[in-house]
Length: 393
Image 1 (cartoon, rainbow, N blue to C red):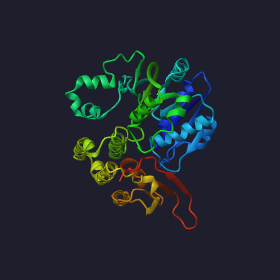
Image 2: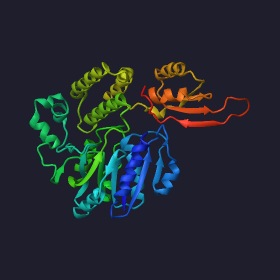
Image 3: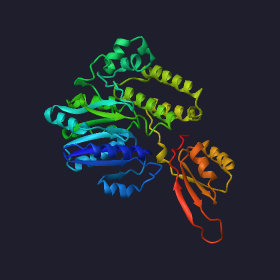
Image 4: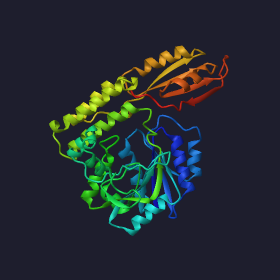
């Protein structure tokens, strides 16, 4: 049986479409979809639990957002407990075509020395994404390939990502993209659980190191094709995503390459300059600047700080009646607070103005309650959880 682990965070629409693409193009082998929700701050428009029962999905709701690796570890653990002989790791914004999953499973069956196989990945327009990692990433690659210095070191850049290879042919790689890959049971038992220190990013490099140490091969296999829509869970949190990327890069250099702080600092300085350049055109990046300094500085010093979901949730109740601009100013003041885990509970007393304003303009975690009749006694109420994502503070 194939265990298909899908990690969701605030992206229920893509998650549902990912599941539908699997069901439309199922593998010949038996399979079990394991949906892990990383403490999403919203709920889908459809009835979640009815949909789960109807599609026989194994659903696991994490109590807090554990990050990419830790969230996937929950699903991998469940797949191994269920006796799965192969495990497919999938982002929720991946779409599958006919044979996508079965081709990867058959390749692992034919090549027992291969622990991980990755598919050909195309974007939403059908363009091929050439971005396998073809050799180990050391400090040299970090400085010469993963910065704008790659403009001067084109040969090294092209060979690192395999741009000089034929992506219509099968070839061994150091690591495949983390958005979609399949690993055998024996490989999963050897390299899992994944390193849970990084919240997001650099997971391919860390997994590649573990694969090398365990003696398993990683292979790119173009017969299996998937579509990746990119960034479904992070597109509204670009400053936070950038920060997590820098933190993970520092951790990788420090823990996997054994780099000292003086060796990492120039790279950290380069990332800081990139962040400041983004601040010039983005209020979100400017608002997140202190958090960037705090989190990346702590990572440079080897200190793990609490994530947002580890703070108790604070709910702020706001009652309004047809005054969207006043409500907007109140919510703007909430967005400027430094406490990281806040939701607004908005009670609209009989009109739709607040709801329309929220959908068009605001990005904040909120519980919306509409009192449909303004009258004495117990009015009828409609509870609606806003589906727009929260802003990182």
